[in-house]
Length: 127
Image (cartoon, rainbow, N blue to C red; front, side):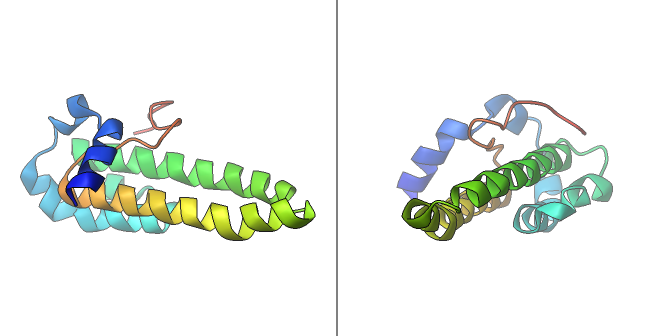
């Protein structure tokens, strides 16, 4: 797991991570995990503890993950119309990318890290 930690540290927001309380992490990590695995539940960490920096961070990242999935789904749907390339992108690449990012975000929420989504993680904050 050390190699995975090394790779994921590139996406870690250390300033945000320093504001996380270990009690908040242990109490609310299940809600952050659910928010990443079922992105439509992005608000779940926030409503469990509105004052928690951990919950706010993971609610924001989950919301960005939902938006990213919608945009990528539309793009993959359009690319999916191309016979061979479309099949590869829509049926193989997209699910593997989603699975990898889901794994990374869930892993980070369990460890109490502040991993931001690649490219879009720092665009805006809702909560």
